[in-house]
Image 1: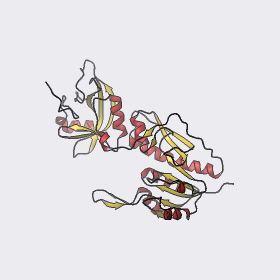
Image 2: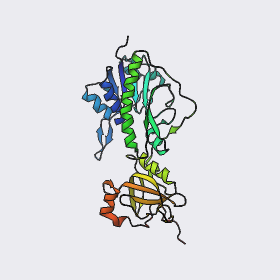
Image 3: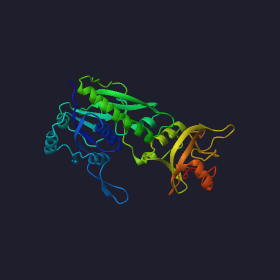
Image 4: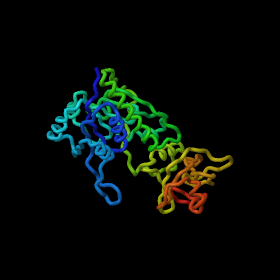
Length: 329
């Protein structure tokens, strides 16, 4: 006979807060919440609780915020909670084997990809950047490796040519909440089976950096468009623009118009009604069509609005990106 499970929840960002909300609405009982210590945020660098802590406090749950789970006294404190299972979602701390062994049913993780593809830190953005047409969530039994544990349940989600990192984040956050409740319900009745991850198809999703958000217009249009979408809302793709930066938030790959000659990569072509058109690709014969952008100091806007207000900033022939050191001789 099944009974509700006593859960220790560990997570930190918005993505994890969605799963916490789903568990709070389920038949299972959350005993306590672990989350990262409060961090400075905003212009005032004020110490700010994580989204998971905020959600936990709203529901009167005990909150623990250790800097590490390696000290023996922190492990003893966790063990004293005497839970059936620990659910870990984007927590941000390494769980030593001693911690993984504490809950009676071990530790489950919600990972934002269809494992074994995109193990690691940034699976949502890397899937879009790579041109994948499908992502999803995997409920995984945690082991000591990096996202290497047995799979308990997967739920797919499509990636379209217009899906941004933010879109996929929100969809998978909701899907992860549904999937973890489903997995725990099955675990409580003894009907959940574990499947080892296949050896084939393993890829790693490296952590995002601001440095990689600068676009190189010598790359193909499809690769550039995928990067623009993947990096929206963070770290946001950008290019050199006069002496400043233009931030690019929505884009698609396109072709030169009939009888339109190739141009040096990064050259602004004649715009259409609602997009900047930037020559790209090794031969400058492809087009990155940008439909949402942000001028320095301004708001992110549809390009048709930018062109209506500031067409003077986007004259055809202007070269974007870091190419100005090239010789014209």
